[in-house]
Image (cartoon, rainbow over all chains, first blue to last red):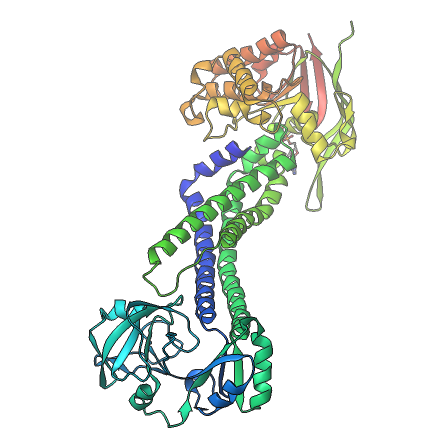
Length: 381
Length: 230
Ligand SMILES: Nc1ncnc2c1ncn2[C@@H]1O[C@H](COP(=O)(O)OP(=O)(O)O)[C@@H](O)[C@H]1O
Ligand SMILES: [Mg+2]
């Protein structure tokens, strides 16, 4: 039966090919869009996982980057038990690098460069709360002026290395080190002394954007966040990294659903296309199906044959869509800031989806074909 | 030894409704068909020959009266039952061959066996054997478009025989063929009838074919007008 179905499909190669193509495009849409959402999610999760402990910032701000938080609460926090370290941090976006403007949108993944100003210590953490390693050169010394450590992303994109000069906004700095973190986003950062950054962007005295809190026991972050909130009162927002991940997962989960829904609609259009094709193909074979029935094919056998045909279209469409999806994801790897992440589950789901679309699109034509009256079919000379 | 009855028609009528008008295609036909019969049904166009053949081939059920095929009352069978009856006992040959254009002769012959459990090797063996008997073995890998009318009908006959049916029904099998080919095809059918003891029922309006039958049925206005036995 499989062979006969395959042979039937080979009769109108162009038509079969178009049906397969329609499914493939639907599957491709699902795969690429979902992979994009998944990749984005992974990247953001990576980014957040770099931020350990808790950040504290003023309540009225949308996010830490817009906040003006009193620096003196650092001392209050340092006195609390369970807190290992509280570091004032100023974060900002660059206006220009070497006189060339950089995009300012805080949500854009490319081109935006974040400035991190903090208090460096001998112990050598990279920037408050963000873990990373020094790839080349060295970290900043406490209170060191005129020097910066840049992220690997900037080093690559601007071809800047240890010893080079870099002009940030209107001021020249010397690069003393290059760092790397596990997140692309954080690799587009520049570290400098907190007072240096305050001067550079004219940030108010005694204010910082946020305070980064490191805990003695990181597992306790939820509990500690509540405690800090209680202590500081309603004027501050206290966010633990795990909370961050959770709320972002929620948002991204919804985006993923939306993306899949949109892509599924594309696939349903493909399904209608196949239904139409199969219906045409069945009508053209009116007499043939008549002779099959006359020679003892049951309604069930006819249905089976047509379903085989439409399911084969689904299988080929699925394979083709998947193949192109992987190829495109591979091709775009490194060319776009987000990796298109095709998980095994996504691959299997979208393939099965294609097969099911084929199967379902065949149901009506198959039923219709099974109802052909062989006498009518064979009379029509 | 009495001959075995393969088809029994008892006072069979077939009506078609066209809108509100009822058309009687066949009325009051009673007939017994025995194993090994070679029946020629003859009559003018529209007299009900095809209708009768369809009833004898389990393609249709009568409006009234009874049709038994191999002892089975058609009235008691559903679509599936009729299909299985055709699969086991019946082969059809049609005026315009109805071969599938994309399949070669061999594949066309094998097609009725596709839903069965018979394995491919056996199917091919049977199909080749039949193509040899009907005399088109040398054309078995040719598509229908490459076959002459006579060759196409031979392939169709082989297809009708592939399920080893008791009864072969042919509706104007030579209607599209010239007189020389007609005689060759009829000889082939007669050979199958004699050698394999299969029952043949041939519908035609060609009077010259009556010489092949052991029984000749003359149909007029949905009735058996006259029956000759030889
Ligand atoms: N499906 C149908 N609907 C209406 N009338 C039909 C149908 N099939 C056959 N008839 C009528 O029944 C009569 C007998 O038809 P048929 O058996 O095909 O005759 P024959 O084969 O002898 O030419 C004709 O008058 C034909 O028009
Ligand atoms: Mg007729």
